[in-house]
Each structure stands twice: as structure tokens, then as C-alpha cells.
Image 1 (cartoon, rainbow, N blue to C red):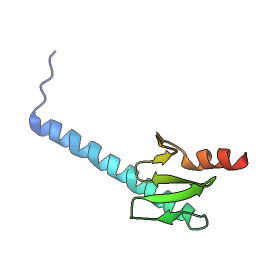
Image 2 (cartoon, rainbow, N blue to C red; image 1 turned 135 degrees about the vertical axis):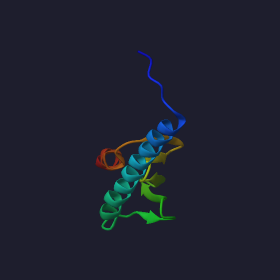
Image 3 (cartoon, rainbow, N blue to C red; image 1 turned 90 degrees about the vertical axis):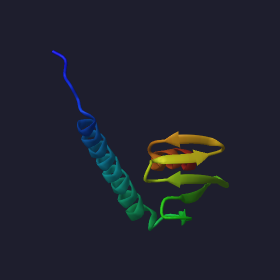
Image 4 (cartoon, one colour; image 1 turned 180 degrees about the horizontal axis):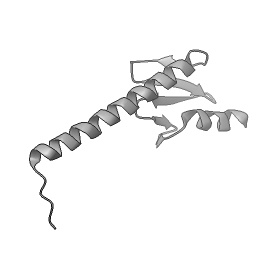
Length: 88
């Protein structure tokens, strides 16, 4: 049959998803924080870092796992991205 969902229920679901997303962002930050301590990262704000890769600036927002390099915005494993380019 037809399931009725009240606005209150939707709100609860939305709040839950928001909380999960927040926890994931905090985990991303914590993981990154422990990694940058021994690398050449520069911190600009709590959420924004940069790194010099092959003479060009790479901007990184660890909480969202988003980075920008040579005008391109990407998401994913920034470490693998850097490793691949530094190996060449």
C-alpha cells in the first residue's frame, strides 16, 4: 500500500543524514591532520590547505575530500594524486 511520511519523519531522516555527513567530514579532517604533520602542507584555515606540487599550487579541503590543481576541481584520494605526479 501507500506509505504516508509526515514532515516530522522527513525531518528526522534529514537530520540523521546530516549527522552522518558531519561525522564523515570530521573523520576526513582527523585522518588528514595526522598525515600532514610530516609533509609539506601549508594550512590556511581549519578547512583549507595547500601543497606545492611540481611548482604549482594544489588546494585541498580535506573535510569534503575536494582538491583543485591546474584549474580542475576533483574529489577523491589526494595522496594517490600527488604520489602519481611526484613519481614522474
